[in-house]
Amino acid sequence: MAKWLEIRKGADFNAIARKHGISPITARILRNREVYEEDDVKRYLGGDMSLLHDPHMLKDIDLAAEIIKAKIEEGDVIRIIGDYDVDGICSSYILLTGIKFCGGNVDAILPHRIEDGYGLSINLVNQAHEDGKGTIITCDNGIAAVEQIAHAKELGMTVVVTDHHEVSYAEEDKEKMILPPADAVVDPKRRDDEYPYSEICGAMVAYKFIQVLTEKMGLSGKSATARLFEELTIFAGWATVCDVMPLKDENRIIVKQSFRCITRTQNEGLKALLRANEIDPFAVSVYIYGFVIGPCLNATGRLDSAMRGLELLTEENPQAAAKIALELKEMNDSRKDMTVQGKDEAMEIISEYGDKLPDVLVIYMPELHESLAGIIAGRVREETNHPVFVITDTRDGLIKGSGRSIESYHMFDALSECRDLMVKFGGHKMAAGFTLKKENLNNFRNALNENSKLTEADFEEVIRFDMELPIGYLNIGLLKEIERLSPFGQGNPEPLFAARGVELVRGRILGKNANTAKMTVRDDSGRFYDMMVFGSLFERWNEFLDTNFGSDQREKLYSGDNHVKMNIKIVYQAKINEFRGEESIQIVPKDFLP
Image 1 (cartoon, one colour):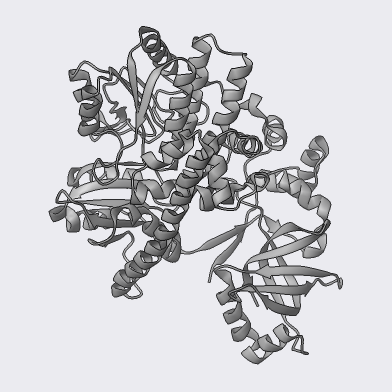
Image 2 (cartoon, rainbow, N blue to C red):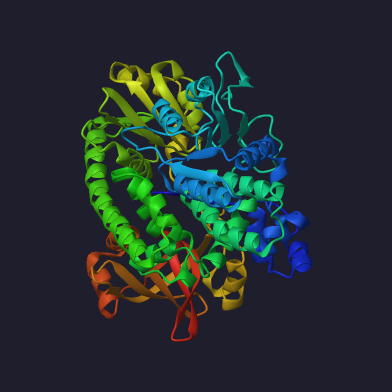
């Protein structure tokens, strides 16, 4: 059973409401997200692209742009090396499109997950050199590629790094950064960087780099440049969602603008991907980015080559784009089936621990396709609320792992404490990847658990809600006002409320798979509301009804027969449902108590 906690942060909600023309309820929601200063509230409620931070504030970005500008003017051939996830593909597309727009002779290569591993490898450096490329620019990787970039420099190459991952530090001095020996290193996580918001994705770093590059090339203010950035905004926003960046500050602005721009996109590949998934461009949301079209792009890097995803985004022929988009959707459907099987196997492995799980779960699955390790780690984390690493065998005799974390466990720092056991590693607080020798597996598992510092309270599921709000306080105007706080996601959760005395009046089962309950509920003043229970909550909802009221009463509730009075407490979200031009309030519970 989850623990319910009300977020209680003080402020003069009435004063904030009067000043900004909002309700005290919305003012309190904003305060719960640490938004209460006048400028912050204005940015949150009406933030536009003019409020993005100045890209010149990023350390080394002007130097990096000057280097690439010189290479363009010299006619040097430039190679972009990205990564094989959505952020890597989108950031590569942004750099490729932007540098070409500036007249650069440029191409892009994305590493093969199994053959090359993450990011910049010695093999990719050698390949670029053999292909006659004098300059490498990385995106969404490179900050940890010290050896690889040193090798490129020995070959006489110019290297520019654009990345957003954590910067390694010296074991003996955590204040001392270990930067790769590149000609320029752009990464908001640099400790000497004064950029005001460091939690941006690789595609946002690439986007800001192209902003500076076009400026230095004398292209600012042109209509063609404005059209370029309208397209690039889509991919910066898409990657921000898929890389699970906090939807705060400028991330929230770029994602909102991305939704606007995608309705006008001229990118044939993106249009084909939307069509393949039957998505209306005007209905794109955080969910669509993160759970529908994002996984299609990710599937290429997991089961095939991420280059196929980049080919989709650069394809100009609609028929060819449609073919690639269908391939990606089918590949993602296959990945879903493999994920279900892998997750079941992982849960079976940890069931051997019984009721007492280790603080940090290190699950060795030698036969698992290594590309699925991160997804399965995330699924097991959701089930157990423990940090999880899933490790698989690789073709070169090493083992490779991917981890997903919980809020109280900094995964990159934890790996840094046992760096001597690994061949390489990288990542950030909530996710990380690594390679190690098989003989170090048990020592790795032991070291993580001995150093975990986690307590039992860290593993308890906690539902934090914004305030207790009886459902009778809801109205369409309030819900439209709350919608101004979207997009909701990581770092900007959709508001949650709690209500007691919610009476269940009647219900019925809906859906092809009979896994949705549409309930009619009544508040204490006698007004009726629709409540929808679906997804993973449906089975638990029926168990809850059976436990507290009896299965016979549940059946009567669903059949419309007379039943005992059923009053419950809920933590819920409130949404506007539109049907045939009529708007109504719909309640979506997230947890419930008798």
